[in-house]
Amino acid sequence: MKVIMVCSGGMSSAIVVKAIKAEAAKQDFDLDMIAVGSGAVEDELKDGDYKLLLVAPQVKHQFATFEKYANENGVPIAKVEPMGYTPIGAPKTLELIKKYR
Image (cartoon, rainbow, N blue to C red; front, side, top):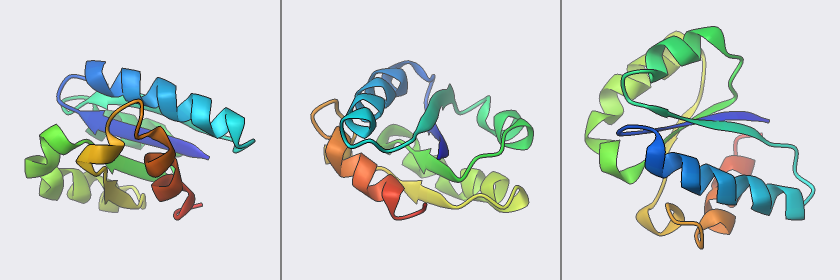
């Protein structure tokens, strides 16, 4: 499953994405996931074949903008809960991702 996560600059999300990928591997769940900053998400959605756009807690105030980009590209969108936006919260966020497979 191909997933993109957007955060402010892409740096903090990269750490979380790494943990989610590790959890997916433990659960034998095929996951191709990247993190991008808010300025890159529109172009990345156009160029990719994503099945889900996740919005990190620190950019939830931009949700309406990201939702517009997601809708234009036929990609479902979901907010990551603050408790799921940590390496320890990776299992919680993976369960959210699985709901969209």
